[in-house]
Image (cartoon, rainbow, N blue to C red; front, side):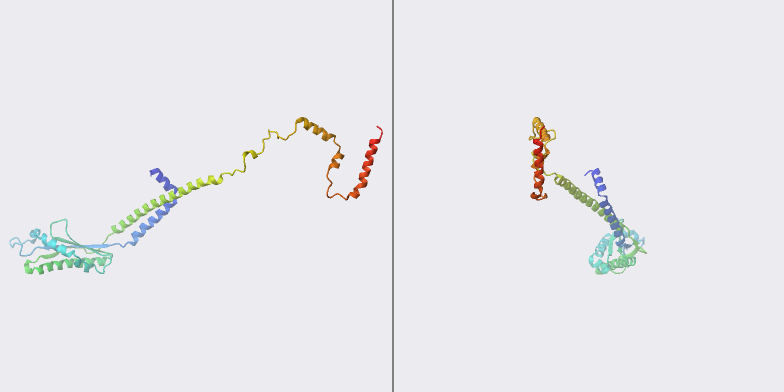
Length: 289
């Protein structure tokens, strides 16, 4: 479909586009408002080497952090297990917990991040997760009977004082709803335009058939043209003779040939009048000329 055809379709079905845009805007706003805003809070734990590892002449444990990578990997794996995270997330709706080693540095640092729908709940979940990491580190050393100055020491490196609202989640969902609504509007407009176009074409094909006149008879039944003379017309001479004959005929004969009227009086009453007329006619014919 070309761009011009697409624009024409949208302009023809502007009411469908308008309705779709209104519903899409409402869906995006509702999604942004109804989706709860999550809050997150984090902290980090630094693993310090055992005191027995640190050289008494140097006395700086930070110089020996490079040998803690193996212990860090074991600690993270155990802290991320379901038996460790499950009890912390139980009873907290929409909560999430992340325990990872810091990917930005080789230093043995464990990053803990908690997320939930309430700021207070988020802080409590973060504190519980950091305490769980410390407990797991102690259990690992207890299982190997490591005591005293040979134990690895956890130190809280960073701790967020307050939870931060994560607005990107609601915005992303609103944008997704907006895109889905626009796509649905375009598809619906195309479907409606195609259906209405086919229906209009079908009506145009049916209307000429309905308006086609029905033949009443053959063309021979039509009235003859005015220029054509009727076949039963008399010749001119016969017509003239007939005309002169009509002029010479007396009115009395015409009146005698006419049929009697149904409303005329009885025959007995007309006899005297007819006798008088006949006598007058005889007198006229016998009179000398």
